[in-house]
Length: 160
Length: 361
Image (cartoon, rainbow over all chains, first blue to last red; front, side, top):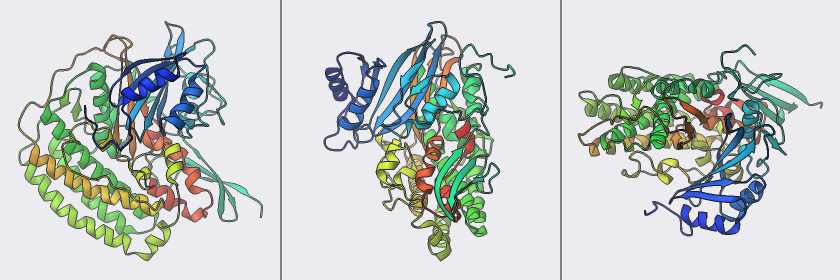
């Protein structure tokens, strides 16, 4: 499909996916790519190096969102990053799996300041620790909250 | 002089909703700032996990009452991505029209709020008066003035009412004249320009890095608009331009929003011309497969709205994540505030167009 308004030198999602798959043969699995979308599963050990390369080498300037997901039955947590490139007009979805008993992942706030509050909110709601985050304190919940309310084993409606 | 922390809020005169801006001042100059949010947190994302898919549409309206159409539309777009539904063409045209009408309505409410922030009561009264015309159009369309519950998964709820075309054209003709009045009121007012120009500087690099989106990003000279660069609905079928200003200050953000209102009128006119009769809705499935994901992002009046959904194999989502544009923009507030006088806070934060309902969710 032809891209509308793609700047000269802009790359499609397929090209970027090939580039990433070649450079990161360990730890990154590109699951799907289209002209403006890119989906990948990423091992948490290579997340920061992948993100650094995406920012500096592939013009991904903007973090759209960082979401947490709690998979209670599978005993894992997920962090899902959506990162957008203004130059290439491509949005990438990176999925990182974490063990549920020790959900820790490196922070990407030092790369994109826009991830700061998203990570803080994800910690606030899920208890996923972002190592290296500048200020991992409660954001939406009141200070002193002792639970992580978006976890699936939190019963909604309960008095905290 | 000793520095001290000042709390502005949570009861603000200048925004609808509650939030607290902590600023550290040295004399009158701000040296540090820290927004504190969460006063309106109601666990929206958690509540949706216990609701069926269609039940969430009216809830999405309540994310921001000023721009509720764009939020319920974003929700429907996300679920359509999850369930792989193709929306009929006429529904897409109708959605484009109502989204742009909503954008004008939301920007008018922002302009009114900015007017009160800066002490010009006329700039409050005039936009609110014209906003009423757009609310009337919406009421004709779906019966509600503010929380519409109008988009549906797979289309829209009902077709347009009789005389839809005539009414819209009349309102737009009238509105475009009034828009010139607002510009005269603001742009030719020395007080307004002195308070808005050269405050709240946000460089293009910082704006991109800090995740600022929408009119605030374009006010910093970055030429990006989701409507053009990742088109949804019928934005790729109409001829319009992205409004960008290069001066990066509060005044530039104001200018972008004013130009966008004019551009929205242009888009609506073209859509009305190109719209053809046809189906307005398809029947969506009731369930989504377990573990399947979908996401969508749109150009909300305030920036990039985004939702990410995971199916659960039944009628309810496993997880629904909302990215609110102002949630991220307000985290960049210290970048805009530090170095300016404390009296500039209303002008700078007023130019951002805060909405706390979507920020705290």
